[in-house]
Image (cartoon, rainbow, N blue to C red; front, side, top):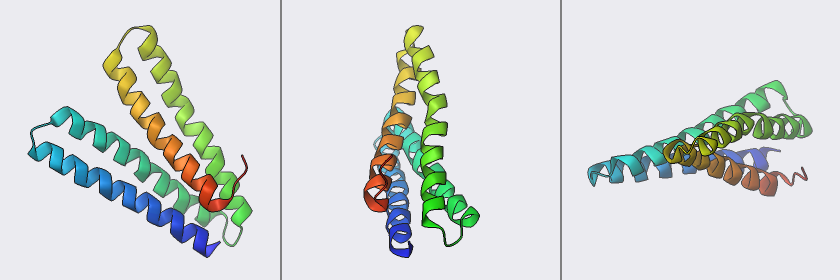
Length: 122
């Protein structure tokens, strides 16, 4: 589990750092909206970095428990974003819909990476 855990932590930390770096460059280029998009995605990666730490704390020495906890959160948390995206789309709020889509794209990346690193089937 240690190798899987370190690979996943490294991935999440790298994504947070990449988003922060991209955001800083966009701010410097006076591209505020795009900088905000990077901040949003960086926050999603940060959320799941915290969730991974909680999963490990609650399941010491239990890789199956960590996997189950993390996969459960991968379903629970984005369900609110899907709902918000649907509402924004229904009312024609393209900006709000785009912001929710950014979150969903980031969480999809997290999920794919986790499944690949962890060997998870679900």
